[in-house]
Amino acid sequence: MLVWLLLLIGILFGGLVLYRNFQEKRTVTYFYSENDESLVNPARGFYTQIYYKEPERLELIREEGQTLSLVTMSLKDHMEEPIPEEKLERLRILFEEARKQQVMLLFRAAYRQNEECGEPELSMIKTHIEQLAEVINEYKDVILVVQTGMVGLWGEWHGSVYLEDEDALRNEAMKVVEWWLQNLDPSINLNLRRPLFIQTAMEVGLDGSRLGMHNDALLATDSDMGTYIDREGELAWCEENLNGKVNGGEMPYVSEYTEPKHAVEEFEQLALMYLNAYYNVEVLEDWKNRTFDGENAFEYINRHLGYRYSLKSFETTEKIYQTSDRIQVKIQLRNSGFSTIQSRFKLYLVLNDGKEKRFIPLEKENDEKAVEMYQCSVEISEKEPFLIGLCYTDDASAEKGSLEKYAHTVQFANDEMHYEEGVNYFISYQYIEEEKEELVPSMINNR
Image (cartoon, rainbow, N blue to C red; front, side, top):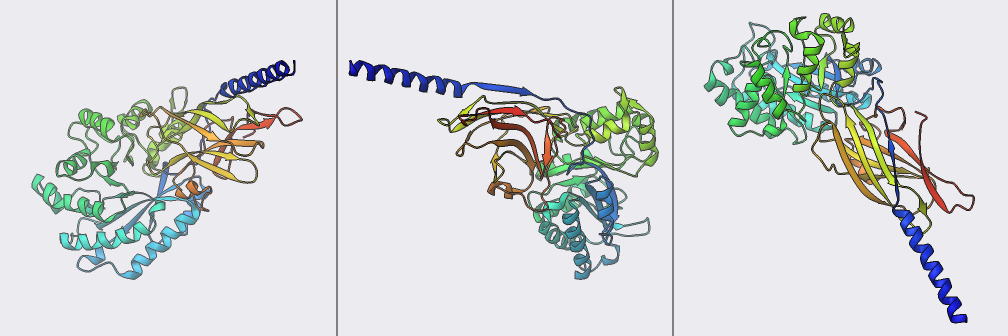
């Protein structure tokens, strides 16, 4: 009799364990909507142009809700000599302030400030690039992109002896691109002025994966003032080849091409990340008085420059028992921006129990721009209430479980999230029984 009783108890206990294990495998899915909030996020948006001697302006730029600035440097006084160390030190001071203010920078150096200015020998350009790259690499965390510069009026690659014909372009101007790529840290991308220049760089064997475009005659004329030879064909090429690169520019004046619908379509083709906040003011004011897709055209473009991430769905384990030690996670992120985020930014799942944060790196499982998919299995060692969040950051220290003081982090466009210290929290696992037997997830809605 005792044997049968023990056997029955064993069967019941085994059944309970199997039931619990079955319960552990059950999941629940939460769905989230994108809001229409304008977010101040890094590596995207409108920029203000400043001179390298103006670090004090960066604080004001940040206060105005911008995270980007174009820093320009004139080299017209150094045609035949290296850049003086005191000038490079001024650049370091500005980069240091950019780090402090969490403003990312576009950088361009140039010789020809007017028609009368000449250009140095290629050997001196190489020396200057080596000097500048050494300083830039020290502050690679604040550099969004380097505009190739150096060649032509204002460094915009027109009006140069190094661009007189195809031979000069391939054999002389392309040396400038090559030297930048050789000397800059591999994580730093380079911008060229025309699709033709990027194509030529790739044809002569340079690394096209680091090359994007800055079109400083955006939406101006049929050719964008010489940017395109075949506008339709080259825009199609850009759409095929420049997504995921750093692309931007500025608009000279109002034209038929600045009409909001056309502008949005072209910005999507160009995977546009950044625009000048002041050039041209007439274009921006025109957008502010126009509509696109039923809303203010300027606000729409402002929100969609670069990336715009929101959580679309989250699937997780329905209950955690004391016998359970893992949760299953599936994530879908929506990106409604013109472009994808820079590859230097990585996504982390964050678990916060109030005592410490765990940053778990996530690997993207698909190549689509509009929807990114991730999944993982996470060990839960302590059976205490905790929050789940997402952190998109370029800070490698997240791998060690923390974020640096000046880390760049991304806020998501969801109302069902609480953004705090760089993390977008959206799920809370809490006990639902007094005996603390099981943890159950629920949505957070206190942004």
